[in-house]
Each structure stands twice: as structure tokens, then as C-alpha cells.
Image (cartoon, rainbow, N blue to C red):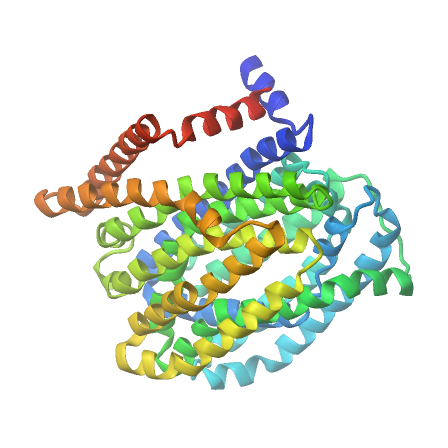
Length: 499
């Protein structure tokens, strides 16, 4: 117990920006592991109990909520984090007023629009689900705005408690409800329970108490920065979840369930790492925004570490996807495997791409996110109908992956290289060794999976262990033979954490 207490104290973010960022990454990684693992377990339980139709109805409710939240996002948290001054208390009353108004607006519109949404998707059973989940918008609007300090000051141990408490409430509430009444309502009830717990926790963990007030100038300052976040939020929804809406409308709620969970599962390993990195590096990059050499070095190191972890996770998941789906969800869900494998590649791109968005926001250019997202949305919109009609959700996945690799990546690399006064090739070079090592790993893992004849769950374990061992061995060989320097980078990160 004493050792655990000592370890926790050592992991409390302290020291310089680099040390605080490294320690914060540990907390955020732990939070994301909990945030993904527990809902995944609940999803597996529900998938076994209720099947894809009920989860497709949940998907319609969730995407409806996400659409309205994206339309009303004004980037208040990002604006507060990006500001140079450490103390932003003078803005918090205004932030609370704006968030409460936003919550009430989303609740009202979503509640009233629920019947129309049900008709749009030809799913009348989803109307009551949408109306109940709309309460979430009000609960989120009431949270203590001072929780922004957890990110701004890299106090991710507090953010861990705040978010993980909600995830635990989500899991246990959903599990109990699923056992009592295995239906879509188990997920909806869990979703609201998480919001209630996080609302209460926001006032227990931070001692700031916002008052009732509204400062027009403060609001103008925040919204001036946040207007680009609003645009990028809408566009992010369109290219990140617009395909969900299209699949649900054109095909069926069952196809939507296949596509949504193919996307979530395949992107979770690589993209959740990117959420950790982007969440930590945005405030860290912001502190370096006036020191270009330091900012460039920090960014390249970030890309190197993200690639080292995200590339094998994404490629490895694509290889083990058939065994994973069969073992976790059952044979009823196997039609989503091809789309899942393609979207795993998109997850790798997202992992690296998130670092670019964090950089752009940190130097005060969130407009780049909006402008590049608009281009992506336009290209996807032009081709999504024929691709989905011709090949179903697999065609949708091909389109999403292709647009990101062939259209977005070259443009994003150019912008990032220009900001850092370097070259696109220099940034891409940080992904070369992980791609080689992951290729060797994928070949070995696929071969093992093709020659063993085991139950799905055991095959998954054998393939996963094989992949981990082969990747580690290949990384070590490359590091010793080429001077890659990854061992030194890992040692530096570990030293920053335990120091």
C-alpha cells in the first residue's frame, strides 16, 4: 500500500513542461484505457444479449446527440487552454452561462426533433431513446467550468478521477440494467449515469465556484478564437460521423451498428493513443508557441512516439480482426470484419493526424483544421453514395481511408512542415521504422493465424502474443542496427515520469 501511494505521488504532474506532459500522458493513457475497456466489455455483453438491431437504435440516438453538440460547439475550453495567462478565473462565469444556454438549446431541439429523426431513419423505436438522452446536454452544461484547469495546467491526475468516475458509473449502471432488461435502454441509462457522476465530481474535485454572470467582452474574446473550433467541430462531425448517418439512412439500423462498432473497435487502439497525445500536447505545445526550435523538436519527438505505438496497434488489429470479432461478438457480427480492417488503417492515420491538430491550435491557427476538414467533407460527400450502394459498409470504409491517405495527408503535412519550417519528408521519416517493424509483425501474426486451428478466443491470444513479441524484437534489431534511437526516447520518457 505504501509503495502504491509512493508511486501515485511520483506520478503527480510536476517539474518542467516536458516532465508534466510525460506524467500527464500516463494519467490520460490510464483514463482512456478505462474509458474504452469498460464500455467495450459492456458492448460485448449487450452484443451477445440483444444483437445489432438494438445497438443500431442506440447508434441513431448517439449520432443525433453528437450532431447537435457539434453544431453548437464554440471551443470555449480550447480558447481558455490556448490563452497565455495562467489564471482564467475571470472567464469562468461567462463560460458557465454559455454552456448552460447551449445545453438547454440542445435539449429542446433534440427533444422536439426526435419524431422527425425516427421517421428519417425509419426507426420509430428510437424516438423515446433520443428524447431521454437529450437530458445529457443539460447535465453537461451545468458542470463546473474550472475543470479546464486540469488540462491547462497539465493536472491530468485530477482529470483522471473526474472522467474515470463517470466511466465506472456508466459501466456498472449499464451492466445492471443489461442484466435486468437487455435492450437499448441499458446503454441510455448508463450514458446518463456517467453524466450525473461527472457533474457532481466537477464540483467536488475543484474548489472554484462559478457565479451567475455574463461578461460580453470575455465571451467575445473566447468566441473569437472558438469560431474556428465551431467550424471544425461541425466538419469533424460530418467527416467522422456523417458516414454513420448516411449508412443508417441508406441501409438500415443493423448496417449502422456494424459500421459504428467496426469503426470504434478498429480505431480504439491507435486513435485512443492519439487522444492521449493530443490532449497532453495541445497545452504543452501552447507553452512553446513563441519558441520555434523547441516547438519543432517537441513535435517531431511526439510524432516519433505516436508512430512507435499507433502503427503496430492499428496494423496488428487489422490482422487479428476476424478472430477478435468471432471471440468477442459472435458470428452474427462477422459481416463487419472487412470494414473494420480498412478502418484500422484510418485509425493509424488519425493517430498521427491528431498531433497536427494539436499543433495548429497551439499556435493560434485552428482555422487550418476547419479549412482542411471542409475539403475532406466535400470529397467524401461526392463519392459516398456510389461507394456505399456498390459495396455497402465496406465501400464506405474504402472511401474514408482513401480520402484521408490521398487527399488529407499531403495537405496536412505541407501545412505542418511550413509552420515548423521543416519538410514533409522530415515529418514522415519519423514513421518509417515503425512501419517496417509493423510490417514484419503483421506477416508473422498472419502466418500464425493461418496455420493454427484453435477456438477463436485462443487464436486471438496466440496471434496477439506473437505480434507483440515479433514487434518488440524487430524494434530492438532496428534500433541496434540503424541508430534509430527509440530505446533512448523510451528511457527519456520513463525518466520524466518517475523523476
